[in-house]
Image (tube, rainbow, N blue to C red; front, side):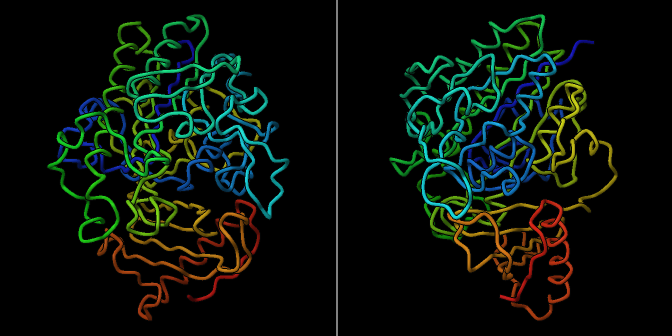
Amino acid sequence: MPKPNIIFFFSDQQRWDTLGCYGQKLPVTPNLDSYAKKGTRFENAFTCQPVCGPARACLQTGLYASQNGCYRNGVALKPDAPTIAKAFNEAGYQTAYIGKWHLASNVGRSNEKIGGRFNYSIKPVPKRLRGGYEDYWLASDVLEFTSRGYKGHLFDSDMKKVPFKGYRADAVTDFALDFIKGSERDKPFFLFISYIEPHHQNDRFRYEGPKGSKEKFKNYQAPGDLVGQKGDWKKSYPDYLGCCNSLDYNFGRIMQELEVSGLMENTIVFYASDHGSHFKTRNGEYKRSCHDASIRIPLLAFGPGFEGGKTVKNLVSLIDLPPTFLRCAGVEPSWKMSGQALQDRMDSKEENENEIFAQISESEVGRLIRTKNWKYSITAKDKDGWLDARGDVYFESHLYDLKNDPHELNNLVKSPEHENIRAVLAEKIKVKMKEVGEGDIVILPT
């Protein structure tokens, strides 16, 4: 059997509960729901960093943000960083990247050594900053700066502007289909499609769903964590679901092309997002918090090794995807990754007894541990989330009893009755931080 093609269909700022297979009542994702019944759905998937750039750096390197240096937006991935694209190149794969990159600019002040200052936010990304994608490149470093919902441009491998009209997600898919149709048939490919939907349009301070979204999805059922909260979800949610519906439509287009071209039987497709959205209910923007609204994501897989309509209940992380991709290709990374390949979790009998670890930047220098029943987070109060990647002294900031408070509305961080569980989780988070090179830390009560 030849090595499989691998496609990663990657959305931006998409909550897990926008998909029908995760409980969405409206027909937002019929294509994804259909394939979830044939493939594998990861019930409890989480990001390792609820910020766009850092999450992407984790995916490209298989290392946590504090390890790869891209601890916040506006820090470029180092040209000599080990990446999955470079590993695929060495294994004889065609490597292709389409859409939002967000890893080519060093901007703003920092207390960390991030290198010289350069800004490709609205300029073509030079080859040395493309993470090793060699065979096909059509991207914008910050796609929300070079486009809006219905118009914009990307840049090709020759650094030439490629304009598009029509809905942005449709255009990105058009480019992906062009690559698939034109790919060499005697070599497998790794295709990373990075959409910006359903991320809000920065310069317009709104979500830009396809025309008609407000009416089409006006009868939504609000997620429990948003009910009774302020924020902007009441005016935003229909368009947000419209964005997600567009992604589902375009996912269907990709899958149809694989069927028509005969590539389906030897192609593995993954679907995930970089983080979720709490719609300004937890802080002044949409993510950058410890809550499940920020960190819980959809994660689906289809194709050889992921068939059968399985549901995996173990807690898994975005950091687990890079070793998973390489495992699919039979490639052993030349560097030690921080995640665990999902193939090792498929037949586990665990019922969420494991835990996930995540780092938070920009809004704070934060760390969190999430288990099946508990959420525990800490913050380095003397550090700045934009200027600093880590701290030495942290304070407890959140404790949630997820079994009895799934919407995380009752913070138990000051509860005397929960002192013991905080102590247990504090030790867990210390161990994890040490594992990823953050050294010994001190955790103090809030």
